[in-house]
Length: 69
Image 1 (cartoon, rainbow, N blue to C red):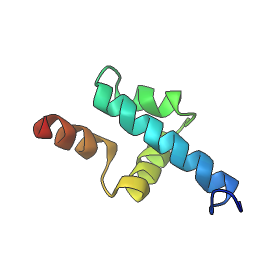
Image 2 (cartoon, rainbow, N blue to C red):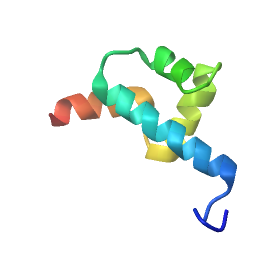
Image 3 (cartoon, one colour):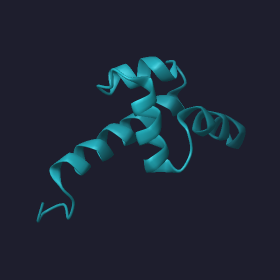
Image 4 (cartoon, rainbow, N blue to C red):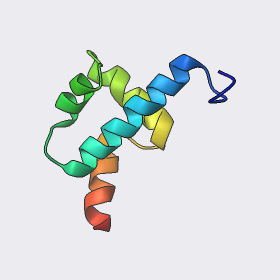
């Protein structure tokens, strides 16, 4: 916690969400598959956490990324 200035749990969540955002940008997988790849068994929990991290749902994130290309 001293090194990263966040709790270990928060750090792992941040890593998962950053990985998820990269997978979404890659465009190869569905949101449900990405949630599974990031260790979430519940798509709603994944979507909720993603929205907390990035301020938008995974679907909106994907749409905004595609439209900004």
